[in-house]
Image 1 (spheres, one colour):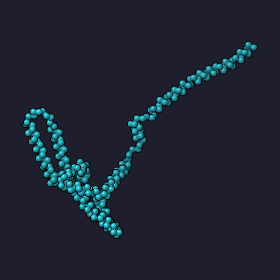
Image 2: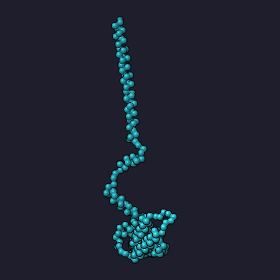
Image 3: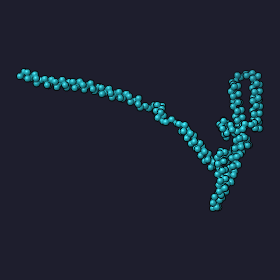
Image 4: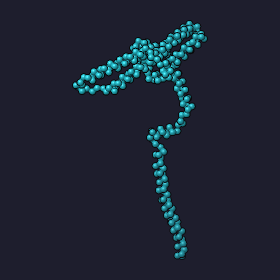
Length: 249
C-alpha cells in the first residue's frame, strides 16, 4: 500500500513541476515582449519628424529634376505670357495716353528718363547693345555739364581745405563723395545715350496709335450706322498696326 501511495503522488508532483516551469517561462516572455514594444516606440520618432527643413528636403528629394526640355518649355510659356500681358495692355487707350504724356514730358524736360524706364536694365539689354553707339549732341552736352560740375566741386573742396576747421565738424569722406558723383555721372551718361532711342520708340508708338485710333473711330461709326464693319483692306491694316504697337511697346 505504501508503494502504491508513492506512485500515486508522483504524477501530482510532475504536474506541479510542469506548472512551475510554465510559470517561469511565461515570466521570462513577458519582459521580452515589453522590451520589443519599447524598442519599436523608440524608433518611431526617427521615421516621423516635425522639423520643417527636413520635411521640405524630404519632399524636394522626391521631386523630379528639371530637364533641358522642361527649361525650354518654361521659357516659352514665360515669353507667351509676356506677349499676352502686353497685348492686354495695348487694348486699353489709357496705355497709349500715358506713353504720349511721358513723351511730351521728356521733350519739355519736366521728367527724367530714369523716372520712366529702368536705365541699367535697358542699357544692358540686347536692344541697347544692338543700337549704334554714337555721340549725340545731348550726350556731349551732358558730359560737358557733368565735367564742369565735377571741376566746380573740386575747386570748392580745395578752397574749404585751406580754411581752418575751428568747430571740428565731421565732414563726409572724399571717397564717398567721389563715388556718389561717379554714380550720378554714370546715370546721366546712360540717360543721355538711351534718350534718342527711347524718344524714337515713343514717337513711333504715338504715330502708330494715331493711325490705329482713326481706324477704330471708323469701325465704331460703321457699326453705329449699321453699315457693317471695316473692309478687308482696313481690317488687314488694323491688324498690322496693332501688331506693330505690341512690338514697339
